[in-house]
Length: 291
Image (tube, rainbow, N blue to C red; front, side, top):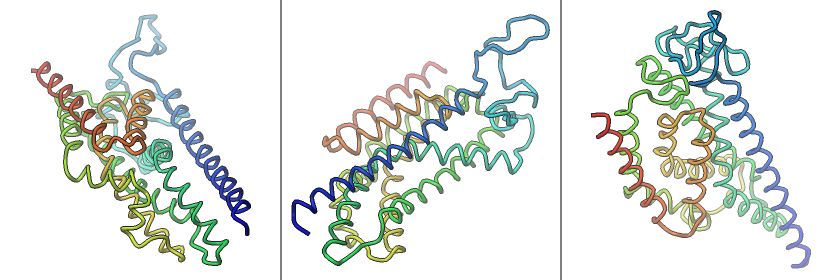
Protein backbone atom coordinates (compact mmCIF):
# COMPACT_ATOMS: atom_id res chain seq x y z
CA UNK A 1 0.00 0.00 0.00
CA UNK A 2 1.42 3.41 -0.97
CA UNK A 3 2.14 6.07 1.63
CA UNK A 4 -0.65 8.32 0.35
CA UNK A 5 -3.22 5.52 0.39
CA UNK A 6 -2.10 4.42 3.85
CA UNK A 7 -2.38 7.96 5.21
CA UNK A 8 -5.91 8.19 3.81
CA UNK A 9 -6.85 4.89 5.46
CA UNK A 10 -5.32 6.02 8.76
CA UNK A 11 -7.30 9.25 8.65
CA UNK A 12 -10.46 7.28 7.96
CA UNK A 13 -9.76 4.88 10.84
CA UNK A 14 -9.12 7.75 13.23
CA UNK A 15 -12.39 9.36 12.13
CA UNK A 16 -14.27 6.10 12.72
CA UNK A 17 -12.71 5.64 16.17
CA UNK A 18 -13.39 9.26 17.11
CA UNK A 19 -17.00 8.97 15.96
CA UNK A 20 -17.44 5.82 18.02
CA UNK A 21 -15.98 7.51 21.10
CA UNK A 22 -18.24 10.52 20.62
CA UNK A 23 -21.30 8.25 20.37
CA UNK A 24 -20.25 6.35 23.53
CA UNK A 25 -19.65 9.56 25.47
CA UNK A 26 -22.89 11.16 24.27
CA UNK A 27 -24.95 8.10 25.21
CA UNK A 28 -23.33 7.99 28.64
CA UNK A 29 -23.98 11.70 29.24
CA UNK A 30 -27.56 11.33 28.00
CA UNK A 31 -28.09 8.61 30.60
CA UNK A 32 -26.63 10.80 33.35
CA UNK A 33 -28.80 13.75 32.27
CA UNK A 34 -31.87 11.50 32.27
CA UNK A 35 -31.13 10.37 35.81
CA UNK A 36 -30.51 13.92 37.00
CA UNK A 37 -33.70 15.19 35.36
CA UNK A 38 -35.87 12.36 36.68
CA UNK A 39 -34.52 12.62 40.19
CA UNK A 40 -36.37 14.68 42.83
CA UNK A 41 -33.83 17.29 43.84
CA UNK A 42 -33.74 19.40 47.03
CA UNK A 43 -35.78 22.54 46.68
CA UNK A 44 -38.11 21.15 43.99
CA UNK A 45 -41.84 21.49 44.46
CA UNK A 46 -43.57 18.34 45.66
CA UNK A 47 -47.27 17.57 45.85
CA UNK A 48 -48.72 18.77 49.11
CA UNK A 49 -52.16 17.47 50.05
CA UNK A 50 -52.50 20.30 52.54
CA UNK A 51 -51.77 22.95 49.96
CA UNK A 52 -48.61 24.07 51.74
CA UNK A 53 -45.37 24.94 50.00
CA UNK A 54 -43.06 21.97 50.26
CA UNK A 55 -40.28 23.38 48.10
CA UNK A 56 -36.98 23.13 49.86
CA UNK A 57 -38.10 20.74 52.58
CA UNK A 58 -35.63 18.17 53.90
CA UNK A 59 -36.12 15.10 51.73
CA UNK A 60 -34.22 12.89 54.15
CA UNK A 61 -37.37 12.71 56.26
CA UNK A 62 -39.56 11.42 53.46
CA UNK A 63 -40.71 7.84 53.47
CA UNK A 64 -40.32 5.22 50.76
CA UNK A 65 -43.04 6.87 48.66
CA UNK A 66 -40.40 9.16 47.16
CA UNK A 67 -40.08 7.86 43.63
CA UNK A 68 -37.42 9.02 41.21
CA UNK A 69 -35.07 7.91 38.46
CA UNK A 70 -37.46 6.23 36.12
CA UNK A 71 -39.95 5.22 38.77
CA UNK A 72 -37.51 3.24 40.91
CA UNK A 73 -37.80 3.73 44.65
CA UNK A 74 -34.67 5.71 45.45
CA UNK A 75 -35.52 6.33 49.10
CA UNK A 76 -32.78 3.98 50.27
CA UNK A 77 -30.27 5.35 47.77
CA UNK A 78 -30.62 9.03 48.64
CA UNK A 79 -32.40 9.32 51.97
CA UNK A 80 -30.60 8.04 55.03
CA UNK A 81 -32.27 5.77 57.51
CA UNK A 82 -35.30 4.65 55.47
CA UNK A 83 -34.46 1.03 54.70
CA UNK A 84 -31.53 -1.22 53.87
CA UNK A 85 -30.50 -1.38 50.23
CA UNK A 86 -31.82 -4.30 48.23
CA UNK A 87 -29.78 -6.00 45.53
CA UNK A 88 -31.60 -3.90 42.92
CA UNK A 89 -30.43 -0.72 44.68
CA UNK A 90 -26.81 -1.85 44.51
CA UNK A 91 -27.16 -2.83 40.85
CA UNK A 92 -28.84 0.44 39.91
CA UNK A 93 -26.29 2.57 41.75
CA UNK A 94 -23.37 0.60 40.28
CA UNK A 95 -24.79 1.12 36.79
CA UNK A 96 -25.15 4.82 37.47
CA UNK A 97 -21.50 5.11 38.54
CA UNK A 98 -20.21 2.92 35.70
CA UNK A 99 -22.01 4.86 32.98
CA UNK A 100 -20.98 8.16 34.55
CA UNK A 101 -17.32 7.08 34.52
CA UNK A 102 -17.59 6.15 30.83
CA UNK A 103 -18.98 9.61 30.07
CA UNK A 104 -16.34 11.40 32.12
CA UNK A 105 -13.25 9.40 31.12
CA UNK A 106 -13.82 8.58 27.43
CA UNK A 107 -12.84 12.07 26.17
CA UNK A 108 -9.54 12.04 28.07
CA UNK A 109 -8.51 8.58 26.83
CA UNK A 110 -9.35 9.43 23.20
CA UNK A 111 -5.74 10.42 22.25
CA UNK A 112 -4.46 7.03 23.43
CA UNK A 113 -7.17 5.14 21.55
CA UNK A 114 -6.61 7.13 18.36
CA UNK A 115 -2.88 6.37 18.55
CA UNK A 116 -3.63 2.69 19.09
CA UNK A 117 -6.04 2.56 16.16
CA UNK A 118 -3.58 4.30 13.84
CA UNK A 119 -0.72 2.00 14.74
CA UNK A 120 -3.02 -1.00 14.44
CA UNK A 121 -3.96 -0.13 10.87
CA UNK A 122 -0.32 0.42 9.87
CA UNK A 123 0.71 -2.84 11.55
CA UNK A 124 -1.91 -4.76 9.58
CA UNK A 125 -0.72 -3.14 6.36
CA UNK A 126 2.83 -4.24 7.18
CA UNK A 127 1.70 -7.81 7.87
CA UNK A 128 2.29 -7.57 11.65
CA UNK A 129 -1.23 -7.12 13.08
CA UNK A 130 -1.85 -6.18 16.70
CA UNK A 131 -4.91 -6.85 18.82
CA UNK A 132 -8.00 -4.73 18.24
CA UNK A 133 -8.38 -1.33 19.89
CA UNK A 134 -11.53 -2.70 21.49
CA UNK A 135 -9.52 -5.04 23.70
CA UNK A 136 -7.40 -2.18 24.98
CA UNK A 137 -10.48 -0.03 25.62
CA UNK A 138 -12.20 -2.92 27.40
CA UNK A 139 -9.24 -3.24 29.78
CA UNK A 140 -9.30 0.48 30.44
CA UNK A 141 -13.03 0.46 31.20
CA UNK A 142 -12.63 -2.60 33.44
CA UNK A 143 -10.54 -0.51 35.84
CA UNK A 144 -13.27 2.11 36.05
CA UNK A 145 -15.88 -0.61 36.53
CA UNK A 146 -13.97 -1.74 39.63
CA UNK A 147 -13.80 1.88 40.79
CA UNK A 148 -17.57 2.16 40.25
CA UNK A 149 -18.08 -0.85 42.49
CA UNK A 150 -15.99 0.79 45.22
CA UNK A 151 -17.86 4.08 44.76
CA UNK A 152 -21.16 2.23 45.10
CA UNK A 153 -19.96 0.78 48.39
CA UNK A 154 -18.88 4.23 49.55
CA UNK A 155 -22.29 5.67 48.69
CA UNK A 156 -24.01 2.86 50.59
CA UNK A 157 -21.81 3.49 53.64
CA UNK A 158 -22.35 7.26 53.58
CA UNK A 159 -26.08 6.68 53.23
CA UNK A 160 -26.19 4.33 56.20
CA UNK A 161 -24.24 6.88 58.25
CA UNK A 162 -26.76 9.59 57.29
CA UNK A 163 -24.03 11.66 55.62
CA UNK A 164 -25.69 12.12 52.22
CA UNK A 165 -28.49 14.52 51.34
CA UNK A 166 -31.07 13.89 48.58
CA UNK A 167 -28.72 15.18 45.85
CA UNK A 168 -26.22 12.52 46.95
CA UNK A 169 -23.83 15.17 48.26
CA UNK A 170 -22.45 15.09 51.76
CA UNK A 171 -24.72 16.91 54.17
CA UNK A 172 -21.77 17.66 56.46
CA UNK A 173 -19.86 20.85 55.72
CA UNK A 174 -16.90 19.57 57.72
CA UNK A 175 -16.74 16.30 55.78
CA UNK A 176 -17.13 18.11 52.47
CA UNK A 177 -14.36 20.52 53.38
CA UNK A 178 -12.04 17.71 54.47
CA UNK A 179 -12.62 15.84 51.20
CA UNK A 180 -11.76 19.02 49.28
CA UNK A 181 -8.59 19.46 51.33
CA UNK A 182 -7.56 15.83 50.82
CA UNK A 183 -8.20 15.99 47.07
CA UNK A 184 -6.29 19.26 46.83
CA UNK A 185 -3.28 17.89 48.68
CA UNK A 186 -3.28 14.74 46.54
CA UNK A 187 -2.93 16.95 43.46
CA UNK A 188 0.58 17.83 44.74
CA UNK A 189 1.75 14.31 45.58
CA UNK A 190 4.49 12.43 43.66
CA UNK A 191 2.00 9.62 42.92
CA UNK A 192 -0.30 12.07 41.16
CA UNK A 193 2.65 13.31 39.12
CA UNK A 194 3.80 9.84 38.09
CA UNK A 195 0.32 8.73 37.05
CA UNK A 196 -0.42 11.97 35.22
CA UNK A 197 2.77 11.76 33.17
CA UNK A 198 1.78 8.28 31.98
CA UNK A 199 -1.63 9.62 30.91
CA UNK A 200 -0.23 12.73 29.23
CA UNK A 201 2.28 10.84 27.05
CA UNK A 202 0.71 7.77 25.37
CA UNK A 203 3.89 6.98 23.39
CA UNK A 204 6.02 7.07 26.52
CA UNK A 205 3.50 4.82 28.28
CA UNK A 206 3.65 2.28 25.48
CA UNK A 207 7.44 2.40 25.33
CA UNK A 208 7.64 1.76 29.06
CA UNK A 209 5.23 -1.18 28.91
CA UNK A 210 6.64 -3.19 26.04
CA UNK A 211 4.69 -1.62 23.19
CA UNK A 212 1.58 -2.94 21.49
CA UNK A 213 0.32 -6.51 21.89
CA UNK A 214 -0.61 -8.97 19.19
CA UNK A 215 -2.69 -11.17 21.52
CA UNK A 216 -6.11 -9.92 22.72
CA UNK A 217 -5.37 -10.74 26.36
CA UNK A 218 -2.12 -8.81 26.11
CA UNK A 219 -3.97 -5.77 24.79
CA UNK A 220 -6.56 -6.17 27.55
CA UNK A 221 -3.78 -6.17 30.15
CA UNK A 222 -2.19 -3.12 28.54
CA UNK A 223 -5.54 -1.33 28.77
CA UNK A 224 -5.81 -2.31 32.42
CA UNK A 225 -2.33 -0.91 33.07
CA UNK A 226 -3.24 2.38 31.40
CA UNK A 227 -6.54 2.49 33.28
CA UNK A 228 -4.71 1.94 36.56
CA UNK A 229 -2.52 4.99 35.92
CA UNK A 230 -5.62 6.95 35.00
CA UNK A 231 -7.32 5.86 38.20
CA UNK A 232 -4.24 6.84 40.21
CA UNK A 233 -4.39 10.23 38.56
CA UNK A 234 -8.12 10.90 38.98
CA UNK A 235 -9.58 8.96 41.93
CA UNK A 236 -9.36 11.91 44.32
CA UNK A 237 -11.15 14.14 41.82
CA UNK A 238 -13.92 11.56 41.55
CA UNK A 239 -14.31 11.64 45.33
CA UNK A 240 -15.36 15.27 44.89
CA UNK A 241 -18.61 14.00 43.40
CA UNK A 242 -19.74 13.38 46.97
CA UNK A 243 -19.02 17.04 47.76
CA UNK A 244 -20.94 18.71 44.93
CA UNK A 245 -23.51 15.97 44.37
CA UNK A 246 -23.28 12.70 42.46
CA UNK A 247 -26.20 13.81 40.28
CA UNK A 248 -25.19 17.47 39.96
CA UNK A 249 -24.62 17.61 36.19
CA UNK A 250 -22.68 20.89 36.24
CA UNK A 251 -20.40 19.54 38.96
CA UNK A 252 -19.86 16.29 37.03
CA UNK A 253 -19.07 18.25 33.86
CA UNK A 254 -16.65 20.52 35.72
CA UNK A 255 -14.69 17.56 37.07
CA UNK A 256 -14.67 15.90 33.63
CA UNK A 257 -13.32 19.09 32.04
CA UNK A 258 -10.59 19.36 34.69
CA UNK A 259 -9.57 15.73 34.02
CA UNK A 260 -9.47 16.42 30.28
CA UNK A 261 -7.38 19.56 30.71
CA UNK A 262 -4.90 17.82 33.01
CA UNK A 263 -4.31 15.04 30.50
CA UNK A 264 -4.31 16.91 27.21
CA UNK A 265 -3.02 20.44 27.81
CA UNK A 266 0.81 20.40 27.79
CA UNK A 267 1.39 22.29 31.03
CA UNK A 268 3.01 19.50 33.05
CA UNK A 269 1.96 19.73 36.69
CA UNK A 270 0.66 23.30 36.51
CA UNK A 271 -3.06 22.57 36.18
CA UNK A 272 -3.25 19.94 38.94
CA UNK A 273 -1.19 22.06 41.32
CA UNK A 274 -3.19 25.23 40.74
CA UNK A 275 -6.48 23.34 41.05
CA UNK A 276 -5.15 21.48 44.09
CA UNK A 277 -4.25 24.72 45.84
CA UNK A 278 -7.73 26.09 45.12
CA UNK A 279 -9.41 22.92 46.43
CA UNK A 280 -7.36 22.92 49.62
CA UNK A 281 -8.00 26.62 50.16
CA UNK A 282 -11.76 26.35 49.62
CA UNK A 283 -11.93 23.23 51.79
CA UNK A 284 -10.08 24.99 54.61
CA UNK A 285 -12.44 27.93 54.39
CA UNK A 286 -15.49 25.63 54.50
CA UNK A 287 -14.19 23.79 57.58
CA UNK A 288 -13.31 27.10 59.27
CA UNK A 289 -16.81 28.46 58.58
CA UNK A 290 -18.37 25.26 59.95
CA UNK A 291 -16.73 25.89 63.31
